[in-house]
Image 1 (spheres, rainbow, N blue to C red):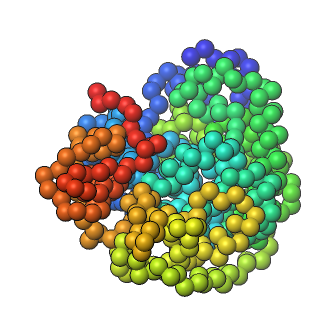
Image 2 (tube, rainbow, N blue to C red):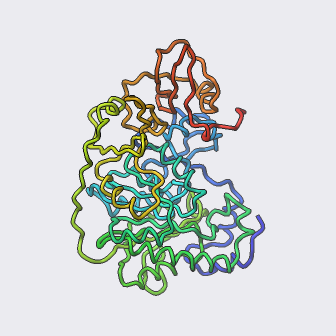
Image 3 (tube, rainbow, N blue to C red):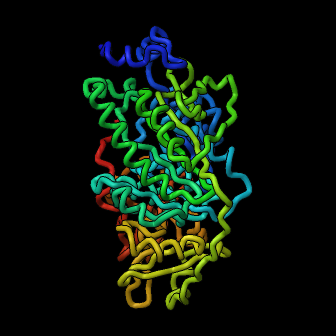
Length: 454
């Protein structure tokens, strides 16, 4: 890697930066890490025997390091949403959130810059959030965000495609607003050397100005007593500590100090003017990439819990309930044309309110289409942890599972007529329907694997 001297000079004197060790770390391979989906529990040692489990990510209970990077595209459990390939440093938000949210329930969270969905899937797995809104301003990135959320199987997540200024019309109603802002990307140089060519002081200044605009709207969405979590994958002071001071200068927030263990190798810093508590991640100090984050609490009285608006009676409840396990938590159902959607009750009133302001691209879990008093199940239902475990099932070995995920024809010894949930390693990967002695593959066409096996 050929370093830009302007970049190295910009970090001179920044707490935690050690030039020689920093450069040496970029000559080594980036660590490989995954985060498990707690609603689809499995033993990673059984799946990643070849890659080898190297250890746990210390600040995230569901995070693991692998010795080698497998071909994740050809791992069916990735497509089942059983795990997410995520950079270890960014998993630190789990520790931050666990530090401030404990026994809370039915809180509202907003991931303002959500694609591709790594942090949203993490937030959606935490028990204290009852409703999660994942927003992405760039329309072309909404598809991959939706795909990752479908695979994760959460029924309390809504996805919107709006500018932060438009989202701000919702007002102060979120207990958490995560702003993982677009940045200059210097923290990912080891994984993407080409990003170095795009780095410049002008690019940093442009990103910092854009981040401030996003933060202005993010601050207006946090309720009194709620939290704003700001993060980047940049090393720049201008994009990091300077923006922490920008938040503090509003007079609306106080800095939140989070305890971390010394052996984790995370560098604790402070913003220059308001002394906001911040965290920096350097690849020479820990097993992870460059990352920055800071937590803030909006000062003021605690907001009382909102009454949950009950859903109207759903006329097809009897038909859809048979596809779900019993008993399940309170659910609300709604329809668009003939399509049935399921939302956790705590999220339903938020959906009703937000749909009048935002371009909602995903409203809970899409169960399927109701046609002549029968449900044609959607792939989202197959990914849901609420799926009825008594439904007809076909278990495939890895070779056949990959054929299925390529949307090729898959033969089975015997199967009854009708719908079957297709599984690999006891994890659902999609639907198939037996018709006239032939198993029809219903895996989504635009998600099919194109890579050939090695």
